[in-house]
Amino acid sequence: MDFTIKTYTQLLKSLQDAGFFFQTFEEYITQETVSITESQSRHHTPTQTRNHAPTHPRKIILRHDVDLLPHHSLRFAKIQHSMGIKGSYYFRAVPQSWDEDVIKEIAALGHEVGYHYENMDAVHFPQSANLSPQFSQRSLRLSKRQSPPKKYSAPEKHIDFAYENFLENLEKLRQLTEVKTICMHGSPRSKYDNKAIWEKYDYKELGIIGEPYYDMNFDNVFYLTDTGRRWDGWKTSVRDKVPQQAEWVKQGLVFHSTKDIIQAIEKGRSSRCDAMRCAEPAEVSLSKCAEVLEARGVEMRSLRCAEPVEVSGVGIRSSSGAGIRSSSGVEMPDQIMMTFHPQRWNDKAFPWLKELLIQNLKNQIKKLLIKQNS
Image 1 (cartoon, rainbow, N blue to C red):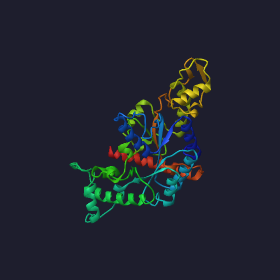
Image 2 (cartoon, helix red, strand yellow):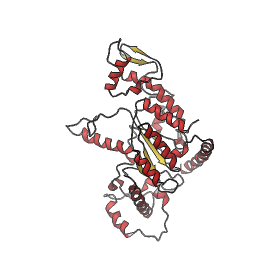
Image 3 (spheres, helix red, strand yellow):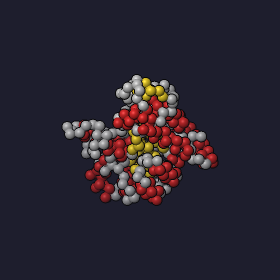
Image 4 (cartoon, rainbow, N blue to C red):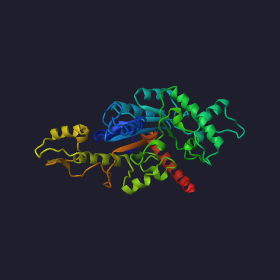
């Protein structure tokens, strides 16, 4: 069965065995900034980070949107911690998600914690309401230092109240742990996009270094999300999607189930050997070739080939061809972000079935919303 804890653990194991390096979204943003800075410096090369450690050729970001049932996210965090993996967890400022003990424990395990904001949808106010004097002064300092657009996608007063609510919730979360990144909550039933706040304000003025839908370079990073309780849920997603999706579909980068993803990863493990051929004579041993590959940045566990390999004059060759490929034969990108909603993953039959039925119903509703808005 899909969307079980067992399946989730198998996915993590397959990514580890394929040689993926797990990093948080904050680490991705920091490394991207450092790489750009160092590429402009005569004293560093673009392949080095601030501490001169080489960058990893294969990286993945595990993002978790804690929409509901925060203890499910804690279970994910503990599994990752036991495997030496770090992830990013984004909490909503609502009772269904906000659990201060869980937030603190996930942060203590070494994971990143961020704010899953939905303030455009959350704020409700009478038209006669006024912003607090403190906010009005702060708003003048923090609004973008540029001419505002001629027209916002939402009433400006609504944006102001939403931003004030954003500031309050961000401060509450920062009292529990460090927060450097944020991520919008989709709120599919809302007529406003929660990202509308940033049409007027700049989150980087608040010490926030990244928001995936603005700061992730999806031209270089392949995006997978379990929205709709499926990995091809962009078809019924109102807001959790990116413009590059159409191009990925053309390339055949389409996965429906977690099993599809795992199979594609496992098919490609052995072919990584072919992609990183050893410049050694034909009589080279497997262990010697492993040493050469490790020197090039490929971990030993990436050599646990899923298919038989043969030693040729150029090193290790697999019959499946180079690279990690999907079931359609398209190479799986080396840079990936995966978004999980941990409340959807369960080993117990009743909660698993309940989530399945609820998500199927939601998907039908989303289809109608998309049709109405098109």
